[in-house]
Length: 454
Image (tube, rainbow, N blue to C red; front, side, top):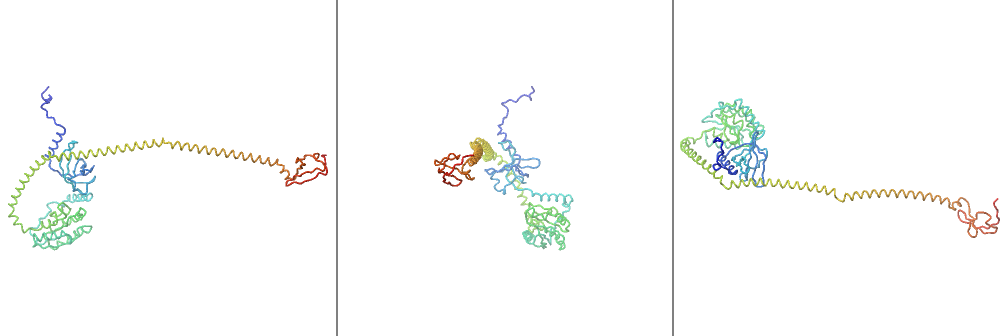
């Protein structure tokens, strides 16, 4: 057997426990990768009772699991929801309990503004493809402006910031204000008119400015016609819209973009302290060199601190807390499943008990009894009708045999002294006392003559 094919001597093998290898991988990742910024969409967001957040960050082609512990998410308001587009700062690590790549999130902020942001990006791409933002179109700002035009709201804080900055930096310059609305449907047309009319006052530079706000508040500065008016203006234009993180189409079209209205005033005016600043340039250069050295030392210290954090019990406590959250979730699901099975069994037993209850038999016997009672009533009624019919016939027969009925028709009965009815004349003799019964009453009579039957 060739030496390369022979199994390695077991005594010389390096055998890792699974947990040791997972911890080694985590250390390698955290040492080699600094804190990273990542943008994506949140899904599978979970917030257990511990206060820690667990979710997945994804885009169209990939996804990563994330954990944001309670001490880091306390100031994130409102809490994110599934589908939110966010920007994260996180440490890439490995969660040893599952052996999975994981991001431990330290900071979260919203990213994107939906349809407005898409419209902004589309307009930006289209105007850039036309060359409207080309750097060779940008004009140099005057070194010493004698007159500065300002296009902004006449009542906003941006105007006060500009005037204060110009007064502090270069009070010799004359300021010409074109007051316009800087928000709403009338803002863009008003600013376009000002860019056409203000050059008639012969300014050396024009400041287009407003204070900070949301993307919707700054939308007037994303107007296509305003961008074209900026490029058509014969005077260099400095934009100072919103805050440092805010960018508008007007910023790209302007000759110079400043982060704020104050920054626009600073860009358009020289500083009377400039010479003093030049004298201090060497001192600043030395300070920068010192800062670089300190930063490098700080980075080395940070690497050592991160390696030390690997051995810190707090890391193990966070892993244990995450594991505890997972077990709690699984326990809750198991209890819920057990309760659902118990409920189904209870419903099954209840259904069986319903079929075995004596009430059904009692109801069935009661129906039979009601049927028998109805049948008996019918038969008794029929027997009663038949008896009544027989009684009627007997009554009619008896009435026809009643001698009084005969007497009622005008006949009479002769009774001798003993009360016997005489049926022939020979049963009586002259002088006998008779009682003649009539239909109503009786008559006493004496026989005077016998008339035998002929």
